[in-house]
Length: 229
Image (tube, rainbow, N blue to C red):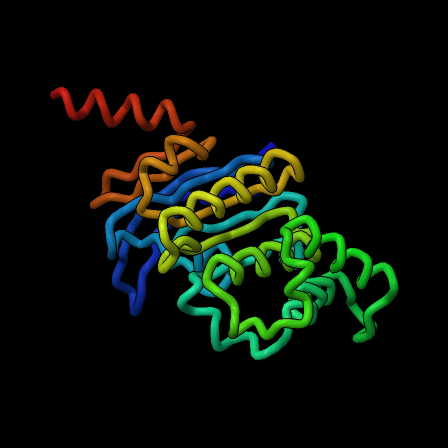
């Protein structure tokens, strides 16, 4: 089942395209890595997926999912100033996406937040200020927030940027576990081809008009064939 269909996308700024003729779909429960060099349009695509930027032409079409079921996790370098709050407050705030009318948290909301913090092993940080945490701890907290929100789709823009290799590997393992155990569909921008080959179910490669999309082994096989020509 496809959750997202992207058809004949042409995207950019002030009428100038960063990429065009891009068509792909995101399957329910998939782990999609979006790869490409700087300037290839990866972040532009993510903004389109999140509804923050409209395509010049083409369209995004979500199937059977609402915007409040889509969680976004930005780079660690971008989030430190956004949350001058405690870890517990941040994780609990994920529950706001499911509350249409009431601004108050219920007992169920608080229990869900507690469960999410425990799942991400950040329950001992509940009363710590988010801004005081390390990059790896911050990402765990934000993932706990996404789980608390009962997100069905998690969109990440280079979440490992600024993290050391050990913490990066831990982050990928957590995301893989969320994908497999909770069935959360993940769309992630990355430069890490090795990680894509290890964790991705699908790869979208953006590169100078030679965009490729498919299951990981299919994209890899296609690239190898081109390299032998």
